[in-house]
Length: 208
Image 1 (spheres, rainbow, N blue to C red):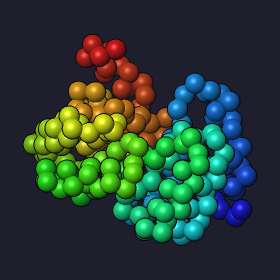
Image 2: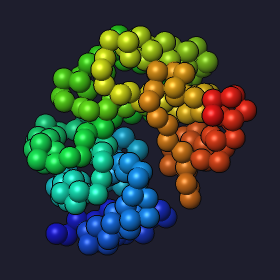
Image 3: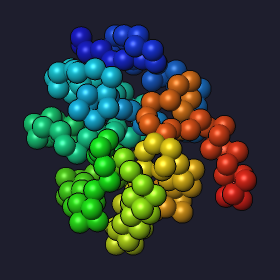
Image 4: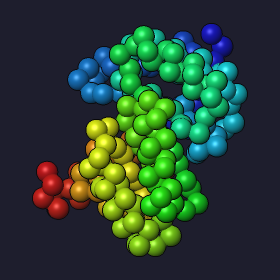
């Protein structure tokens, strides 16, 4: 298989190297869940990659039995999603269906529509990331997520990007979310905090 994906600082990995890396991660952290992401350039990916290449890489990750979830965007081409869903049907991996809005925070109606669409396509975990322009936007996202969370059985992730939305990363359990994303060697999203920062702040807030 000729698919490639990007590592840390733009280093290209071959398909075989990527599989080796997945094995190494699982070997080092056997009790930790692993989310595999090959982000579309339309929603924050570092470069434009043909769907055929992304599909091959994601399906290879699913078939490896090393990943617990694959993060695939809601607004993907139907044929692309159908192939991913087909691979997931015969795998123990689950689909973390995501949507990113780097421009604004949608209205409550729009947020509800996105979550409903995620459930309708069969997502196992619903992930929404938006860009707030004010603290009102942050409160709006939290309120909409908490309300939807009450009527959905699916785990949810709701992130307000940028420094304004830090609370949604620090305390997702208070904002309707089920987990957060922290930076390891380098930050990959606007407003992302390091693991050490999140742990320190959660301790200060008596959340851990």
